[in-house]
Length: 278
Length: 283
Image (cartoon, rainbow over all chains, first blue to last red; front, side, top):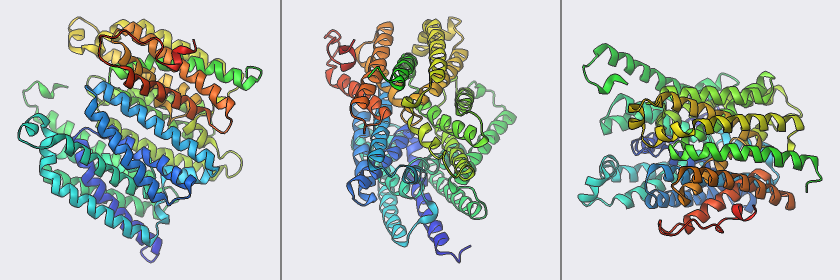
């Protein structure tokens, strides 16, 4: 299997993406920004389509649109009060971005083959240059997240107290969305706009179910994302079905197992408190 | 424009879809379940492709998948309001399944029918037949009537679930019923605007209506008007400029309405601006 260069590239790219997505996803789940993360990952699609239409390299489109999207989402989160209007604004932004993407693709006339690979990625067609770029971006993202980890954690768990303690909560929120946009833009070049999300949310959600300690949680999230990516790539290598299917199914299977396991443990322990009743 | 059969079909189907989306969307935004609606759109994509891969009518897959997923979301989440991590995990997986079905489908039918994926993702309102229109209209009408019958208790349960439960309103059951209804509306809206653009008709008009007024029945009317108006104007624009796909234009108009609502709203003292939107100007 490792004799083929395309498989080595795919494994290296998958490892990089998994580490980055595991870290960024853990914070995303903690901050309850799943919907924002999903919207960001879909914004990558019109970005790529616009770049193709304008004859620019796809990376320009990915990074440009994800950056703009992150700024817009940050403004939405800052300006609106209440969850209801925030989610309506995010949803509108997402639908509009996708509508633009469809417009660009249909103007470009490259519809069928191009559309599928933009949305679902080409994990097995990764070049050496893409791997190098991916590693660089991942290093920047993970390093920045690591530097900002403590204040970001504080600001995510209790924004009011963090603000009182002098933590720049709003700036951190913006910064995190930009980082997330960077991670998503890079990842979706490999996995496609629709499947980034599987690596961002599911391993992180499983880690949150297993432990509430931050460092252990991040490590678990990364480990799960890695395991799922490797297994998915290996399974896809030995079968005819797409890698996206294996990665999403494995991570979702893990999530369901952990939830079911926790529920049975909780029932067996049967603590006499009201919170466990639901 | 009305001389063309496909245009008449599109307008009739679009009107009914708009009515249902506007009504259901108002509650979706009120209950902050936009993400659930988004997930249902993606689930529908998988369902439709599964049906295509198995050789059934695509619509069977659409309706089965959305309603089953709506019930699953309600069952997994607390108090029939699924939280966003559950939704995210579930639909990341269904997208993976969708890719699987897409690959099965495209390898099996190598020639000819390769556009099914694109049609489901981005809609095909101009390709509806007379029969499609009748089914769509009947289902949309059914969903709208059920929703209006449930409107009062649903409003109560959405605004203050605890008090509603104390007064004997079946909050959990209502939540499940609402999600199932949302699944139904999503499935037929997908035929018009596609799985990926569904949110444009559900979130944008309703979001704008919520910014214009807090009164529920006026809000429902606004939401309905905006969404039907978006469908009409979008269809007209794409008829006049054939390079622009209809689903893109419908969503763009809806987004424009929402953007206008953001700029027009300056506190509660001003009465609702009747001239504010293109949607209300056409009626």
